[in-house]
Length: 323
Image (spheres, rainbow, N blue to C red):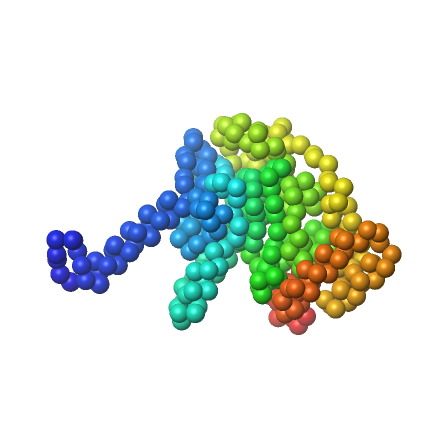
């Protein structure tokens, strides 16, 4: 270690500088507002559609753990800056780290992300996620496990992993498998995009609030002085609406989805979809689904189908049983 006009140098000095830089980055990427007993966390990487990096995940985990232990905090609100809530994990740095042989960094990202998902799923205090924009992949893991999920007319939800050679993770095998019928299999395998009304209809969202009402909603939520979820629910119920599904909504074709996506294999699912085209008019929607499945990674599709359709998948694994 040595001193120079620029400050402390050497290994320890560099580590301190790197630590400070990481802390500054994480603080600017996750903004914190304290309003009475409410904490508002805003994901702040709008140019990257608030894609999650390791700094953000570490910061969020730190904050949520601290708030759970802090008796003065009663409610946590999570939202995104710009036109996205969160478009998922920032994959490019992960790929770069792996290519450069830095496997540990990529492993740390996944470890922290899954830990954060678990913390949110088991959180003792109410969390409200305002999904006023794009919600994909890791963004779903950041919100769907929370007690309250607010969709708007700007919401676009998707789990696009199979098109990327991955599979819906972040706890998606849990929440997709609990959607009505076989809608979860459809969403997980095709990467289909849902709007706010569809999210509300299938249960991915708990409430639908027009974006023009979000400011007023936040103001009322900030008056909550209790961690009792019923107080939050009462406020949200006063703002929520029940929009009609669009005429071409996939959720209105749940009968077709159930017939096709209830199959045990991807091949059987494709065959069922192709049979539907013979007597469904118009069948552009089905053709689009078939095209999406044929473009996706075959391995990803098989893994996704097994994880989402096996309703008792997790319990079987925990008990050491084969599937």
